Image (cartoon, rainbow over all chains, first blue to last red; front, side):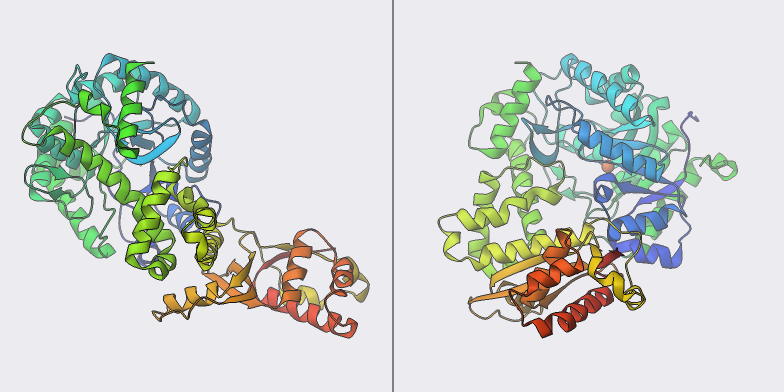
Length: 284
Length: 259
Ligand SMILES: [Fe+2]
């Protein structure tokens, strides 16, 4: 039931609105995830608060701009900046999404889907290896919420991710909400996805909310975690055991205590599903 | 061209233009048709860039009003697609766009408001300096050292020359008041991030603007005073320069006094 991933416990995404609260109250929390790009600036408020907060909590870094699946050359300037930030922050690991964002150097600033085929796998594996060699830290790729698939996909998404993780040696950040959203949009059973993902590759879970439009669902990160996502999380815990888990909230951000309360729900579910967790020594 | 590259080119063309060749690669699935699926991305692309402009230029948006703001947004998004890794820089060319666009250039205050908002952003996330010089350092200076002193400013400090009442209009909108009508009126401003990490700005007289620029260009105090002779009566130069220096020290815009 257990895997070899370092278990950090239960965390939250660090958001600007909560900086002062966190410093003033030092809530009991196992770790924070930062959005790397928000701190890739020279100075000012974000850097000041990050420096203060990282003194008290373990941090992981999560990015949106690597464009790992793009056919543009890898953005080495970005990677160097990311590495500089990592040297400063000393994160437990660094993650980004299994997607492409730029082509011909034009940035969509969106996480765009890839076709699930051999050409894409080879392309990604080669680039992830360069990223890992450059960053010299554990690197995780995250599954997307997606709204379309391509005619030239040859594999299921889960097989595609497994293959990339296996060949590149990277780990997986499994976003439980994204599995649910994509399952609804593509008509597969989310449990099938969870069952298929390599147990040992998963190092982190994201939990989040979405907007349900009936015949499709959009990953908006602006709602509480809804019941079907809690159910899928429960199901995933059974398969993966204790995984560093956090709630991602990017819009309509509630007060810190409300988000903290929501994280307690995640924690309670994990303790119910994995009774041995009580004895687990956090490896951070 | 690789199949993956072609897919990304076609997808990007769909986001940026009317070109819909990508449709041939989109899989038919369930109830939602292929265009609706693609349009989720196209819509998100436009919404994201629009909201970046609105977040970075909130007072410009208010000044323009809904209709003109939307006109500017759609033109800017199509003429200046983002080439930046971070959205932080997406609107860097907005002042330039407003200055040269046939329609918007007829209202020059717009480009000024946009420039002012960008400078405020730069002050917000400029590098930190390990210290700020204090008024004590000035008071402790030996008279012999005065002519050779040079200044290093805090990295967040910058100047803004407004030829219209752009900053006043920005301020009125910020205070939820109606801005007065655009009038040509040259004023100088200093923008910086205070020790409390809040972005600030302050109106400064012409001679302070000249002084700041000279110090920034590495002039020493004696050179600055000499240059000011073109602008001020000689007996005013000493007291005014000391007054401005003291104020800057108090504001925290000087990083270091060197000599
Ligand atoms: Fe996520």
